[in-house]
Length: 199
Image (cartoon, rainbow, N blue to C red; front, side, top):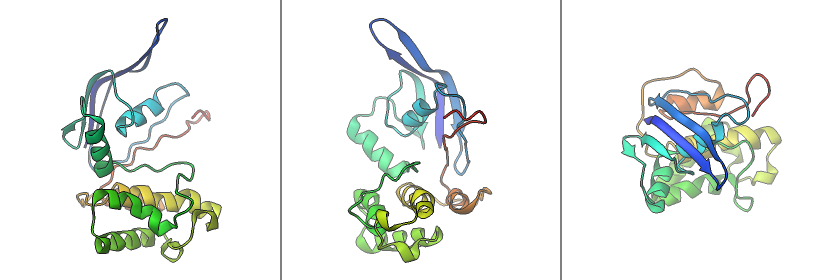
């Protein structure tokens, strides 16, 4: 599903060369849950940016669902990102002028799904994370807990990433909506603070 081999990311200036990732390899299979931890400056954000096709790497290989991403132009990277990757952010990252239904509809429109199919996917996904009765609410109308967690899972994990993705019988045991998203075949690689409180 996600395979990186001897990956390197180097930031260069005319004075210094800094390795954010050096000879990094990982193989994440479909349905697996991977946590990215470590102290500040260890390369977590760089890894997630490269995995999410937001940033290019300097050396090595990266295959996403069998596709070699090295050398893809911006249009092809954007299309692959839209079809294969969903982001769950710590902050809102929703369009404030759109209600929940329309917010989760945005990535599906980019995918070209028919209106009836989009509605079915949105209603099912919001229902699974307990927000079926809030789908016409705007982000500012949600409580902090609803807005910061279940809503983002519905938008990113259940809709953007899982729309038209293959289903799997593997059911990892995770809490609440994260468990259900993983059980439907999506990979979950979160980056978070380590035990010392580092980001």
